[in-house]
Amino acid sequence: MMVSKTAMVMAAGMGKRMRPLTATRPKPLVHLAGKPLIDHCFDKLWDAGICNVVVNVHYLADSLEAHLEGLSYPMDIRISDEREQLLETGGGLIKALPLIEDDPFFCLNSDNVWLDGPQNVFAQLSEHWDADRMDALLLLVPHQRAHNYKGQGDFVLGNDGRLSRRIPRKVAPFVFTGIQLMSKKFIVDPPQDKFSTNIFWDRAIAEGRLHGVVHQSFWFDVGTPAALKPTEEFLRGG
Image 1 (spheres, rainbow, N blue to C red):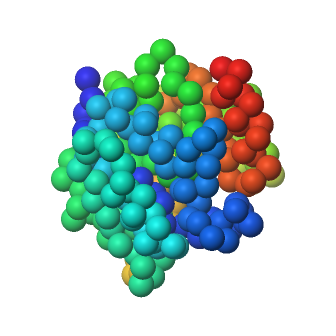
Image 2 (image 1 turned 135 degrees about the vertical axis):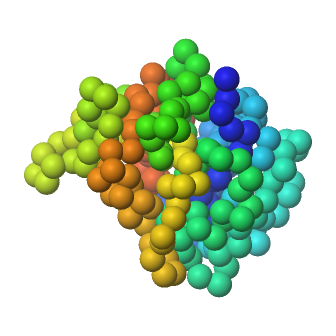
């Protein structure tokens, strides 16, 4: 059973790693396998039964807003406008909070591409959600299923489901997919202006309330132009 019908899609970034493709379009509108990256997200959200979506905008916001207005999904799509100042992930959550009615709610990056496993990722997060024990539940993927990813990982997952940070100069076994389920009580006492969600994560880790669950299929890092072709080839083959 889904614990929320609401998601926030993070779409305000500058897309610097995706240059030159983002010179004239925001990264969510870069095409992969014949359609914009953000449409891949909306396909998954709609298939999972998500009907309320908040999208933050900043870089080339007019074109992204126009695209969202043209989508055919019968969803309630609300815009969190960051045109005046890019607020980063944490600040973006704070600004969007008045538009988010559900608690908890899903949050995902607009450039996320993945294949679902035995159940869709939103159902999987819902199944493992426990408001008494957690403030946020992150979807993780092991390195072998994180296509195009070249980093050292993000988190260590304990036997009790709690998360801890990668140890410096070590490789962490799990990569954060950019998809999470969070409670509104997670988003409190923010710094001024722009800041990263890492501040909320670190607080939750200290309190033992940041948890993770492992994605059962493949996830794709599509942060650069070079990642688009191999991702398309895998999707065609899959």
